[in-house]
Structure formats: structure tokens, C-alpha cells
Length: 333
Ligand SMILES: [Cu+2]
Image (cartoon, rainbow, N blue to C red; front, side, top):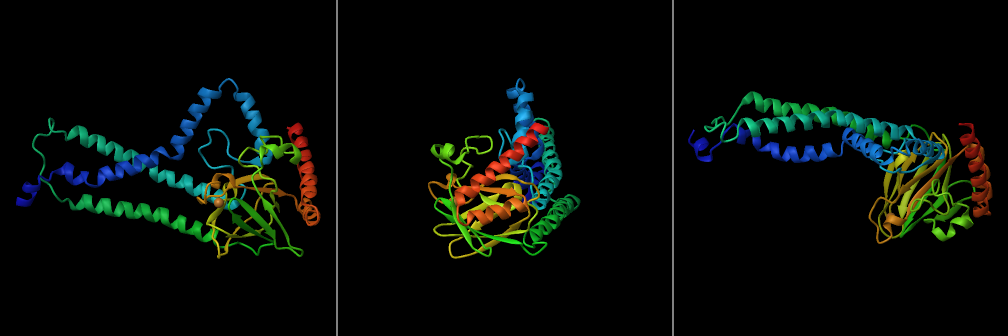
């Protein structure tokens, strides 16, 4: 009793110790949560683009038909192109079912305490310092919540490191300051460099359409892979640590000099996908994009055969074929 008096403990303070810290974390998390972001995005999008909504939708539909890349005001994930990314997206949304109610609960609890136990309304504070029931609840509750998050999280992590089948294609990606080298480990090894597309080179490369080949994401030579094919990616670096990341595929793995990391993907949709180096690697870190073109098996085979002798020619032929398909598809819509 003496100690309680000395330290002036009351209900609010007892409850209050963990609450401010939780409050800061949870409000921060809530600001980033899916629901809030979606609402914000919708609101901003409505306000800004109401007049051109129809045009924007049509544009988005055309763009998304053959490319996956960030879109204006996007705050959620890019559309998944692999089953792994779909699982990651599910887990992200699942987590929100815990974050949002907890945030609301803590916020309401805090507001209630501030109002109900303010000095003027509650001049004589309670001297309670322990309450077994409350302590059990606030210990067991978080444990249960953490278990609900940990189990699917570990399952997802295990799935990411367990390819479901043997890889049919192996590609090595080597990060350099500030571009990527790709090497196909096929019968006749094919290797080439992939660097950011300079604006001055657009016309020559036939990549003037900035919707398909956006600034800062488009590259000179894309990594070409066949659709629905288990692809193993070996990732390393020559100078500093880089990171090979492709959001639509749900992969991100560090490229470390002297070490080979491995990841895999199985792209389900043909298209042109964009990622970026995701490890601060020097002054041009922001200018070493990753572009992966997913094509049909037949297209891949003929590209690979041609690329061994004439990479620019093979790329041009493939682009003409793919762009032709997309034009037909867009006209059909
Ligand atoms: Cu880098």
C-alpha cells in the first residue's frame, strides 16, 4: 500500500504504460492498412480524375492487358502473376483483419480513459495496481493473435523456399552497379546485359510507347521467360549488395557478391513485368530496373535460338509479335 501511494499508481497509469506505445505503433500501422489506403486512393482518384474516369479505366484496361507495373495512386500490391504472389496478397489482407480491430479497440480504449479518468471527472484516482483477470487477458490475447499470424506466415515462408516441382529453366541474374547481367543456363549458354532504357534510345529500340515501356522501369534487353514454366533464378552480384525483386511474382532476394542465392517463380500470365533493385547499392540504385517478359513457349524457343547470335534482332522480332497480339486483343475488347 505504501508503494502504491508513493508512486501514485492508479488505474489509468497501470493501464497506460503499454497503451501509448501500442497506440503509436497501431495508429501507424492503421495508416498503412489496406482499408484506409483503398479508401484514400478511391477518394483521391475520384476527386482528381472524375472527369476522365472513363478514359482512365479504358487506358488502365489496355495497359494491364500486357504489362504489370505501378499505376498512379496505387497503394496496394500490383496484380499477382504467380500463385506465390496471390498467397502473399491473401496473407496481407488476412493480417488486416487483426490490425484494424486492434487499432480501433486501442483507440477507443484510450479515448475512453482520457475522457472518463481526466482529473476533473475523477479527482480521486483508484489505487488498484494489479488485476489478475486483466493481466491474463492482455497476455493470452496477444499470444493467440500472434499464433494466428505466425502459423500462416511460417507456412508462406516455407512455401517460398520449397519449389513445388523441378525447375525447367535456370537463369542467373547478376547485379552490377548499376545494371543486371542475365545468363541462361541452357544447352548453349546465352548471356547479356540489361540496363535502364535511356530516353535517347527509345526510337532506335522501338520502345516509344511510354505506357508499355515506362520511364525508369523500361530496359534495353528484357529477361525473357516462357509462361507456366517453373523458372529458377540464381542471384548474385559483382560489387555491392543488390536485390532482385519482381512484385507481381512475389519474389525479392538479395544479390550478394561471392554468394549465390536462389529463388523461383512460375508466371501464369504472359506480359511485361517490372521490378527494381531493392537494396540501396549506390548513386544509381534507383536506375537499375528489372524487366521480365513472359511469352508463350513457342515464342520463347524461337527467341532463345535467335538471341544466341543476334540479341537485338531477336528482341525486335519478339516485340513485333507480342505487340501485334496485343493490338489484336485490344481491338477485340
Ligand atoms: Cu542495386
